[in-house]
Length: 299
Image (cartoon, rainbow, N blue to C red; front, side, top):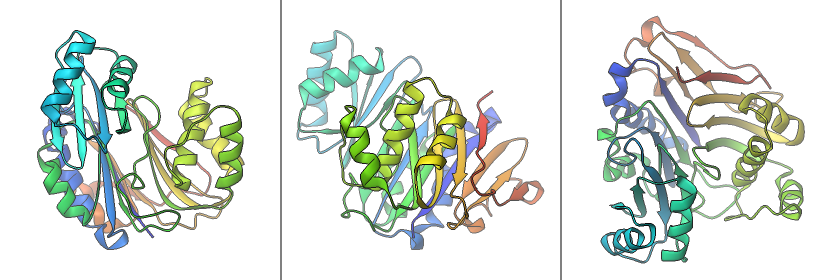
């Protein structure tokens, strides 16, 4: 079943409250996905300070301080680490790809689950509301966040299998539903060099979008292309460092509701996740149409 939430803030006065608001939204979706959860925050000054690249990891065997010291020696700049078990977060004042390369050398057993100039991805197994509290999400700040509560159908209940899937710099995708033809698309992508980290069908969608963006498509065109290629029932929320987009399958089988005000745009699988947002009584509230891409950009 799974639950999706997302919040794109237009009013900088709300940035300090992003984590608090996102946590409240996520808590309303726990019964839709009780086995694991993940969330992505854009612009938190602690996890991803301005001018820093951030990398999020699972299965890191090294103590965070030891990893940060090793990365500092390798990169020549000061790397800071955060132990948000089971996620490890590291950041420093260098290019994201350079930090990714250094992390792969320092801890090759670890799995990179997110990277970018302002993106932090957190994943875990268990009650989504408890995970959010343990991660410290209520105190997070920023301009945009997405979250997902998972009820596993296509792969095992693991932190790695939880959403969001973040496979390109600053990109995240969360998914409610199932891609019926994901194996054939996986094989096609693999033939052209794409490497996968999991058996999850959602990762196939994320890798497809990342490839389209890398080949020059904008996010709207990438999602329209996904609609042409993928079969199944799905609602997707896709975020980049400057965009927030929603798209549904041709018959809009999976639930979704969007609310929009001058101060924010929010999306969730059910209205109850939006009900406590500030000013929601005056919001424009609507259900997204099938196969139409709804996209907002950061100003």
